[in-house]
Image (cartoon, rainbow, N blue to C red; front, side, top):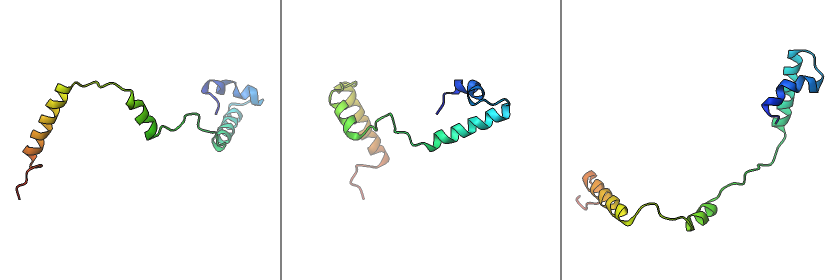
Length: 87
């Protein structure tokens, strides 16, 4: 696909004289470039890549904060009725 800054010079490259012919030429080039199957330059990120990177990541939350969150989550579950054995 051509970069947008080349469209101004496209009529000169194609040898067209009118704006309409230039526009039609751009449309033809764009259609051709969309039809061509280009390989993806960016590799797909898979779960294995994420897991590998997480092995070396450091924790951003301390143990005290995790304990506070777990206590909060437990309180929230109990207030909603989850976690109780009442039937």
